Length: 280
View 1 (cartoon, rainbow, N blue to C red):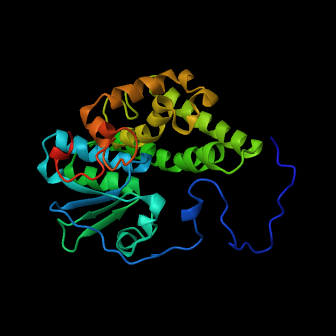
View 2: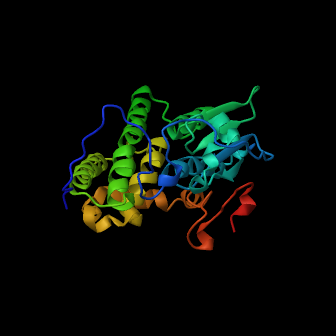
């Protein structure tokens, strides 16, 4: 449907009311903490504060993949940040991520401790720190960087664009849904064409670029996020589906998808992870 009352922007925008829709209660036009609360600290050097959204899942998949390789120093404490309740606006969280978005990592193995925020930055930091899932050949590494940051640039069109207007906005409007559906399908086609002749995004090697893209596009084609699988005809992107299924079959990926998950059947959740024993 089309909006019959066109919006005329004011000369200066002011925030005088919530926009409605899902997550409206946590959206605001200013940064910084809303309340004082320190973050918990576990026994491991790596302290992850996150939620099992696509952006959060990227990091827990990488950490579980590193542990799968037997890298004990990749052991981590994962603390739940409930964004629906505004945990991301606590003083402790804002201190490690001034942008108040999950995930955020604090590495206490350095002096002083190193904070890392933005999911791609965390993936790169951990891949470089432990020397895995990042190609060593310069050209292949550049390809990995390109696909990693392609995902970071494309996700807002999928999540904040299509996902918001198709699933979360208070009303459905034809123009933004059409605009972002078109772009989402174009992005799926970019991936589909790349994966038609490549096992993974950088060739035969599984990298952090695959982890980052799987978290968003794997969920889209395999798990019907936004209840949009039929609308977007995701079944037509056969190479993306093949790639996503191969990644999802990895034991570390199965574990990583469960960390900081506070919804769904109990067997799919590891709300806070502090050791391998937390996986039952």
